[in-house]
Length: 490
Ligand code: AMP
Ligand code: MG
Image 1 (cartoon, rainbow, N blue to C red):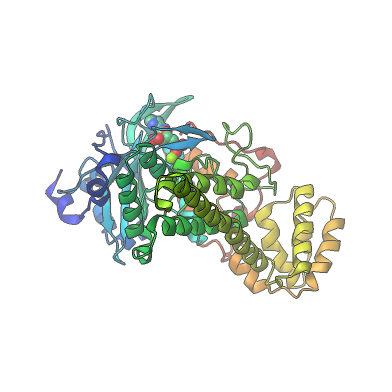
Image 2 (cartoon, protein in one colour):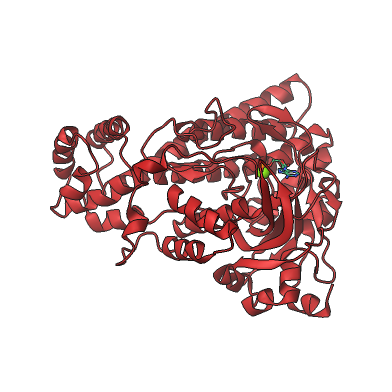
């Protein structure tokens, strides 16, 4: 701990103070040889922290949790979760720490959290560490999502630790410093419920409302109000994922936030060819978390959230009370599909240039997805190039089809709706972190060359604005890239 660190940053410890049953005081392991790989200057500025300080040796000590500000109280957070559907009552931060909460420039509380900071009481046989590649992937994809306007946690920094971590092979180790509006998860509530301590569950509800939904503080039933708010936030979030072709890859209930931010970028990826069955995670053999399965999995996870809240949803623990609670939960859960469908439909109308919300568009959209799936067309390129067709040049989109006949028929129908290409360019990204480019950047970074990663992040920070000289970032993966697989050996 250094005086400089204490002077620069103040961290509160509201989670640790208000929910001590869900926190274990803990410390990060000192890295053998820290080296700052990337620093998110823009995010540092949002937090009111001087990037020059974070680049200093003291700052890197802060980013890795070995030089915590005076008065901070780092903790490993406890949570449960359903992993691929199977309940696990004891997950928790097995390789992570909540350093504390910082008050950002706008006065909002944001968690400063470490991933890869060493073993904790929740490590369950894991080593507690993380590798450079996956931590940098989290940085890249989080920045892409933020730039696309999709709620997300973000990386403030990635620091190489100089430690070798053993996975399928020996890999360089890293710590990710993550910023989130909180790390409250569905799994946090599932754990609180599993303890049987109902006052703890109510305290957790109140903590979550204070942090994320303060306008609900006066609600008649705060747990029910929180349930509705989280259902709404997650329905909107998952609709946004679907509209940009994002596949999270591991939607366990411990990876679903109460805030409605995307969290835990593991085996995640953006679609190349449109395919509802797309799975990128090596361990997802059944396709539980396939692209097209995500909306239903979101609903399943929220049902687990509702179950956790049941004792608070209605008065009385007798049969009548339980029936009333279940009825309330079911009514709340019914809103998920409505909100999801409405958000998705609104987004899809914009992607297609402001098509009317009517039966004609609905049929056109269905036919479009049949056509895209059949032809295995690159999802991102299709929507972006379609704007050219609205401007009079069908060739760029047409060229994506080996057999253009179905496209020729479809585009004719679509053009009769007078789509607005400028609207399309505002919502259909040109630059996403394409899988082959992410792999190229991570491989180079693992070998010590950060230039491809820096270039990629620079490009995806402005996903909608076409710029000269960036053609390779627009192109679909070359055929030689093959099917993309990411490994959970994170
Ligand atoms: P994830 O699927 O990455 O969200 O992780 C699921 C659970 O496994 C969490 O409780 C993590 O803390 C834990 N975990 C993942 N990797 C490790 C590791 N290398 N060492 C210890 N715990 C880990
Ligand atoms: Mg997780």
